Length: 82
Image (tube, rainbow, N blue to C red; front, side, top):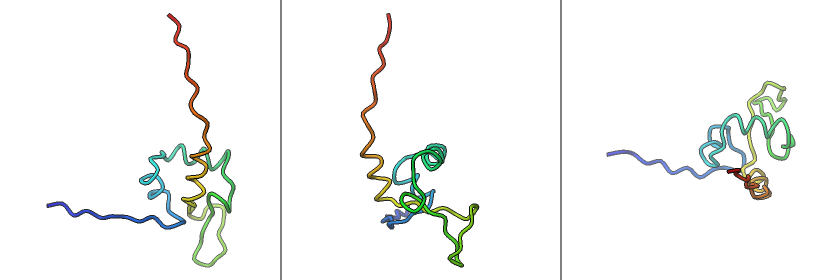
C-alpha cells in the first residue's frame, strides 16, 4: 500500500513546492522572476545568517504568485487560416 503525504503550503515555499502546487515549470518561474516579479513581493533570497546574497536560495510567496496568476489575461485565440 502506498503512503500518501498531504502537504499544506506555507506562505513562503521553495521552487520545488511552487512547481508542485501551481504546475509552473522551472523555466516559467525563472522567466517570471527575471521579467515581472519583484524581489521582496513574489520572491526573496534567504540565508541562515539573515544576509542573503545574489546566489542564495530563493523562496516564493505563494499568495502573491496566485494573485499574479489570477491577473493573467485570457489567451488570445489565433485565427487558423484555411
